[in-house]
Image (cartoon, one colour):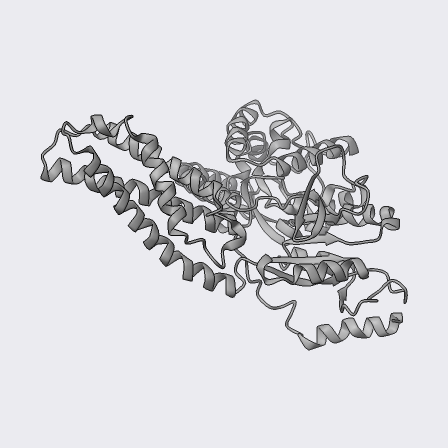
Length: 492
């Protein structure tokens, strides 16, 4: 296929769906979260089923019930049942379309759970001789509840699966026989995969589309689609002789908030150290170059963290922010708030709010980093910057979802472009939302970054944070931020 014909094919694909880029992104849901909810319902069913005989004995039979022992036994039994069901494949994430319903395994797990607590708590929870009746009622009540909840969950998950809500959207870079085999393997409906398309930069007749696959675009179009959140995973499928090219492509794709894989017939030289993992989708073996940041429960937990803490801080600090606003108006002319255009998640442009600390408001095209004893800073501005109080309006950016409490600090767009040219991994910071504070800030990497070594260190800290995110780490960074603010190091 010639370059001209290939270009016409790409144009034809775009013409067939002119609204592709403008179409609202349909977000997919995590299979792991869905199955975790099913597991939670199973645990709740075991515990609620056990409360039934306990309530009958306590209320109707007027038995002297030790509720602490009852609750302890219910919890232990629920955990045992969950572990059995998990071991026996009843929470298989690849079966959201066909939730396992085996009554035999469900009742077997209940039996193991009740035997596990027999003689530990319940015989001493009530002072009577009807323990076996207690267990029979518990077994039947819990089994009925589990069958009911799974019976309700099955059609819901099946419908969501049929609508593609749990599909992983996968794109392949590299057109050729390898891509053809990957496409044919992943086309099996049991994998729950939407094949987004094949992308390739090479237009030579012997490289592009020898197997009948329509090439959706080049590497830049692939990056654009991933930033628009139309892709969840990218598989690099190039021949063994293209190791160098694979390495270059992988470096560019690492900046995206997707999981990145390489077909395992190639060497793993492009993966640093021994941290890579080997996985597979069907019969396609893969080397995992990077995992998708903040997957499964992580985005829900982080968003809940942001909303709860930011809301509390806005309420507590409202009087302080009001006083700062009045003081700014009294000291100098100009707006109270300064809106800075910054790049957020997937390099989308957002407006970050700050209290104005400069005598002049500079345009984003002519922005200059503040330096020690900068004459542009007002007297009040020096105090606000040293204490980081000028950042308080960004709490509203957090509540609107543009920013997070913790994440890589956003830089001016002009500086983004400059550092993006100078540092290969700089763009990797945009895999998550920018933060009011971050790991780099609590490690002393605040303030001006005129020296390349300082920016390299900040980028390294930001990427380390993205790779190892946890709720505990976020809370620790927030606590450390208070100490950094009080100390005021590198703030000017």
